[in-house]
Amino acid sequence: MPTNLPPQYFGAEKAFRLARVPEEKIAALEEMLAIMPKHKGTDHLRAELRARIAKLTQVSAKKTVTHRASTVIPKEGIAQVAIIGLPNAGKSQLIAKVTNASPTVADYPFTTHTAIPGMMEFENIKIQLIDTPPLVPSSIEFWLTNLLRRAEALMIMVDLDSDSLVQMEAITAALGKMRIELVSGKAEEEQTGIVYHKKVLIAANKIDLSQTKESLVALEENFRDKLPIVVISAKNGIGLEELKLKLYEMLDVIRVYTKAPGDKPDFSEPIVLSRGATLEDTAVEVHKDFLARLKYARVWGSGKHAGIMVRRDHIMKDGDIIELHI
Figure 1 (spheres, helix red, strand yellow):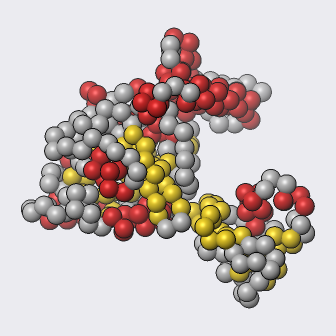
Figure 2 (tube, rainbow, N blue to C red):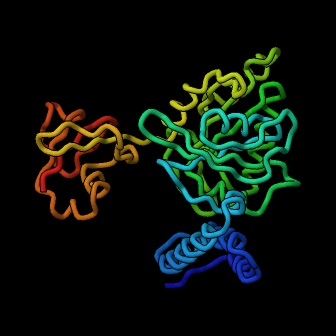
Figure 3 (cartoon, one colour):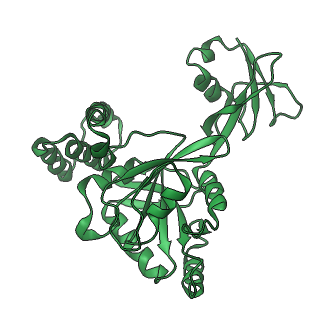
């Protein structure tokens, strides 16, 4: 079956051949994937490109931590969320407050020159946050586009001490050049054609400062019906617990717990699944062999009665407890 590749694909392919370092090659391969039409004729080529990306990512990950932090960052936790914004929006201060990372924090712009990951704890799960350099056209590194496309979601930091609408316009314009489109956290993330759809949470920062009301009102009037917004002060810790909750809700995932017959459930390490996942999906996550050997299962939580036997297509709910019998 013909692939019908557009001319832009061959331009990205040339960039791949000319690339000298793994990070540049990965960026070119991601570009080829984004441009490639999605149909049966490209399935084999798509799989081949993804295999190349995986291999190059492993090569890059073997380099020093400092170099890796600015290029390809392996995903950890239940999701990878990139924090973006204009200079001095407070991204590094937020990372320092809610994760185990130690980025440079200062009252002047451009203190972040690389991408720095940190793990944020929310109840019994962890979410990986990545501090990124400011989204300024003259200083955007080639690897940043690839990093943002790979992330499950984005968090936009808006400085309420400046014009919030001007910032959002600049940020969305920069993302548009990367072919990244923002969607509500309630929408399903997907890649369509040559556009990457990304869930996003807006963090309106510096609410502790005076004269920020007008900027906040403008932001909420223009975006509250389009994207989720949380009001915070990264410096003083205001609204950070709500931010964690909003971020978890935006990811649209559920936590399911397991128990052995006769034992109590294990609440320390939940199985995290996309909302809408079935019992079959859960069984595979527990162990790849469980699905074929599964005789039946009991569920506490979403069943009409505690410990009710359910079918394989049963839709799981957040907080469910399952007991698998094989």
